[in-house]
Image (cartoon, rainbow, N blue to C red; front, side, top):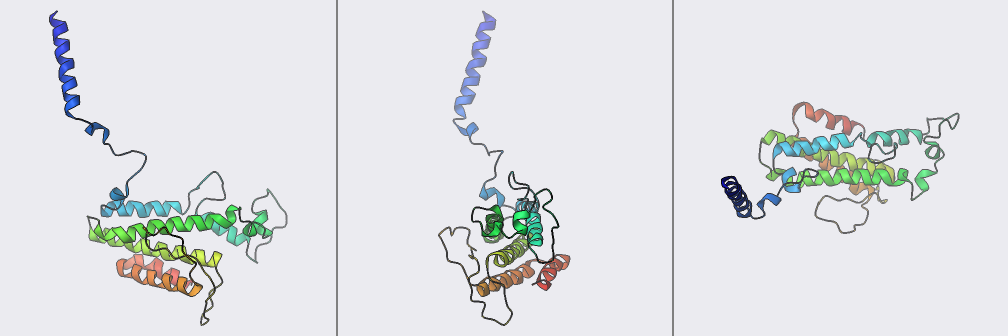
Length: 229
C-alpha cells in the first residue's frame, strides 16, 4: 500500500510540473531549417550564409548531373563555344547544347537553370546586404560577409546579362534589354527587364561597394573579376 501511495505522489508531481509549463515545451527551433531572424542576427551567422553560397556554386541542385551549380554552367558555355569540336556523340552528354538546340527550348534546363540559380544567389546576397548591418558581433566579420555579398550579386548579374541579354559594347548605348534587377528582398512584384547598360551600371556599383567592405587580400578577387569585364 505504501508503494502504491508513493507512486501516486510521483505521478501527481509529474503531472503538476508538465501542466505548469503550459505549451512552452512545444516552442522549439526546428532542426531542419533556420529562420531569417537567426541567419542575420550575428556576424558568424552571416558568414555561415556566405559559406553556404560558396558551396552552392559546385553542388548538385537536383537529380540532374548537369545542374551542379556554376561548374555545370561553365561546361555548357564551353561546349557552346566556337572553339570546341565533338567528333562523335559519345555518351550523349551535351549533344543538344553542341547542336544549339537546348537553349531555344523553353522547357530545357539549359535555358532555365542559370536564371533560377543566379537569382537565388542574388536573393541570398540581397538579404545579407539588407539585414547584415544590424547583426551583432565582430565588425570585421560583418564587413567581410556584406562585402562578399555585394561581390556575389555583381557576379550574378554579370553571368545573367551575358546569357540572357545582348553583348555589352564599350562606347555604345547598350540600350537592348538585359535582365531584371532585384535589389530589395521584400520586392516580389513583377518587374520589367533593365537595359544592358543599366545592368552593367549596377554591377560596377556593387563592385565599388564591395571594395569599401573588403580589405587586404580579399580585394584581389574583385580586381581579377574587374579585369575580365
